[in-house]
Image (tube, rainbow, N blue to C red; front, side, top):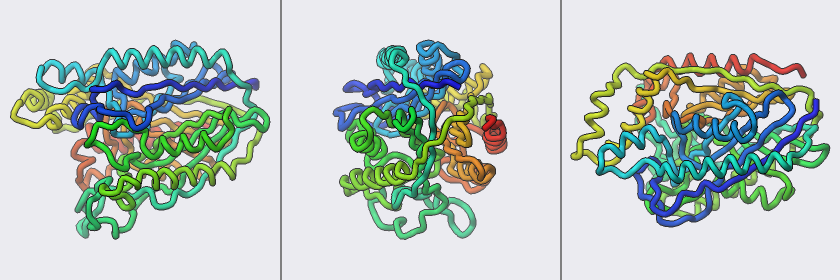
Length: 436
């Protein structure tokens, strides 16, 4: 098998005045550090395979498909062989052109996104991918390892004695009322997968499940946050010819609330250092082995919407000028999902299998339990998961979580059957193993 890897990177930093996090926090006033889209094209395993991580809050529905189509065109492949995953920083664009259309029809709401800037990013992506193909590098080996991340992540859903959500742990609590409580169900492991040409590292991917927020959403200051800054640190201290790519895992119910403080901005640097140290620790354990097999697998799903969602009622809420911006903008995402369901436009799950390593690409904001369950089902495989692909369905709670209530369930667009559908999809993708 003759394989090569073409790595690419392009700027996706929004311009001044662009909306952030869907338009319900202050728009861009300054840029603390740039946002990037970083990825690779894998050549030699059938049609090219494209995997890309984007420093945006989310990309939803038709906008996500447009990204995949654009990168596919540039790489000479098909959209089903392209995975686009957001890192989910919040001082960043949250793009759904379908929702933007609904919002702009109101005339008085801040836009969800700028279609001109969106098109510019697609142009940059096409150019970056095409240019990368001119300098693809042979890959012969792969390696995987993991390391624990210390004191970064906690579960945001705090349950009471009755098994219901008692409190949602803020990402940056101002007091001590929840910090003394246990971290709860998390996945403490940062996973690293690297591709090599002989002994030379060509690209390294990192997977970790946490909401990448230290402080945000108040000043309109764009940032790749502590995970992006950790990635940059790793770039500075590693082989300069290696491309580093960070993916946020199943972090729908994960955040930094136990270890963060809204009054201490220095925590961003502290969290950066802790993630970077885990990247370094995992990298030190990487042991390259010859690549024996590569396989790309996909599965289309379309989870049903919640029965209590009414397009007519949602449209009335969006049009109600007495309501706040957030209570009018957010429902536009819900309405976009319902319109998508009517069009029967599926979500594509995908997995890249290399030897005994499986890299899964999932939609929305899945709860960490999906990640833990998939790993437990296949303990003989090295399983890493990226969430925040197609953001159309928003939160993807477990069936049990629906009985517990809480914020995430209240804004999830799918009904509890999504658990069985997504769990079955993960199992199917992991059941399909390449010949090693």
